[in-house]
Length: 230
Ligand SMILES: NC(=O)c1ccc[n+]([C@@H]2O[C@H](COP(=O)([O-])OP(=O)(O)OC[C@H]3O[C@@H](n4cnc5c(N)ncnc54)[C@H](OP(=O)(O)O)[C@@H]3O)[C@@H](O)[C@H]2O)c1
Image (tube, helix red, strand yellow):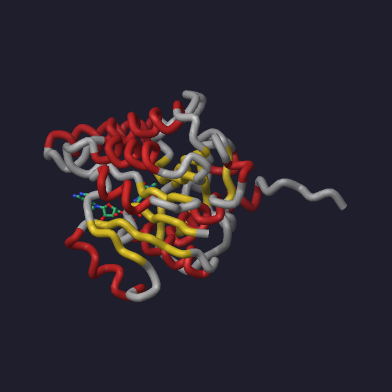
């Protein structure tokens, strides 16, 4: 399997590179020119295509012939970075390719997620400060996801909880709506977020799903684990 990782040099991206190599996949990574050095550990083992992830020519070249595309969707800057990135992937990936995108719990697919007052305030405040300082445009990430949901492509949008570093605990568990009891712990190891993204490539049950994930060893995941028949 040949896999393209868009945003490969970031923390999530590098974990995905490692997981993809562990699976024996051929990996093509896209990252900004100035960040290529962050992938030095993988020199000779992956193909790196330098460039901004919303550069359509860069994405066209990177996804050519790939069976799967893993995209780190980030809204940095006031430059339609998320929408530009997502649209380029949707336009240029092979029609049968599995497309897996990352985002946070603040993205809702069907409006049925229930957020705490504190969460909503934080998102609003961060969105406002980020736009004012021209650091990021959260709305653009929302728009990008709406475009993905509306597309007929074989997509999965993985919605990450709060993240922490640390050794892998295994594949996160997921649910369709924020506020489902299994998600209450709201914490996932970043390495496992990446694992979920990579595993999603071969899990057709996740096609056209927007799973909200949480660490499998967290209290809410353990307390709400499905009971197995004896
Ligand atoms: N952080 C959280 O707590 C959290 C929680 C839930 C979900 N998520 C989701 O997880 C994904 C990545 O999160 P992460 O925290 O793990 O971050 P990350 O992996 O460090 O990814 C950051 C990415 O943003 C790029 N980037 C940074 N500044 C940029 C700029 N000014 N212009 C263009 N690109 C820039 C980085 O590229 P360079 O290497 O070139 O800098 C890197 O690819 C996102 O989809 C996010 O929505 C995060």
